[in-house]
Length: 197
Ligand SMILES: NC(=O)c1ccc[n+]([C@@H]2O[C@H](COP(=O)([O-])OP(=O)(O)OC[C@H]3O[C@@H](n4cnc5c(N)ncnc54)[C@H](OP(=O)(O)O)[C@@H]3O)[C@@H](O)[C@H]2O)c1
Image (cartoon, rainbow, N blue to C red):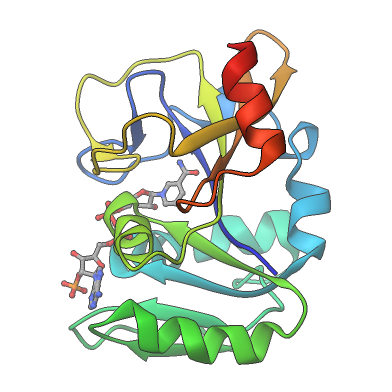
């Protein structure tokens, strides 16, 4: 029952260009070669910020062509925004604003024994991290740099909070890194990994 950040980033730490384009990302690798197919089966609820949701609204036709539906998720989703946004037909979504702790409690109930996915963007994930709610980061790092854009995780998190658990190469275009967030109770296993480094 983890709260996870699963995303792809450029090598210099951006998840989208400054004008929310993901066109740079798709040539780098195939999502099906990442842990995504297995990951999504264990997701029971998801959350995203308004820029991420608006990208999905703008790209609804493309998403439908690829997945058969304008909204690709069967899990309930929470969209963070202070604005009134268009609704994607058939999507199981609710709009929320403000403190992430309260929303996380609702998501936990909905997710049951499954995991919670914070889709992005980076600052929203940071809000969950600030509240002590983030357990894991699963990041595909692309072999591309953007120079500027929307940040992966705009927080200062110093050693040994993030513990690298696995590395999986996806051809020459991407590598997937999985990090556990240690919350002050460093386990024997994570200490071993830190010591090995
Ligand atoms: N590379 C990838 O795999 C990947 C994954 C996910 C997303 N993306 C892309 O990355 C970009 C992310 O954009 P972004 O960094 O701007 O982040 P975002 O989280 O998608 O959107 C940020 C906006 O969400 C709203 N928001 C955030 N926290 C809130 C809160 N607690 N209460 C109310 N509203 C809140 C605010 O907007 P308002 O209040 O004005 O609505 C805020 O400006 C998007 O283009 C997305 O498509 C890429």
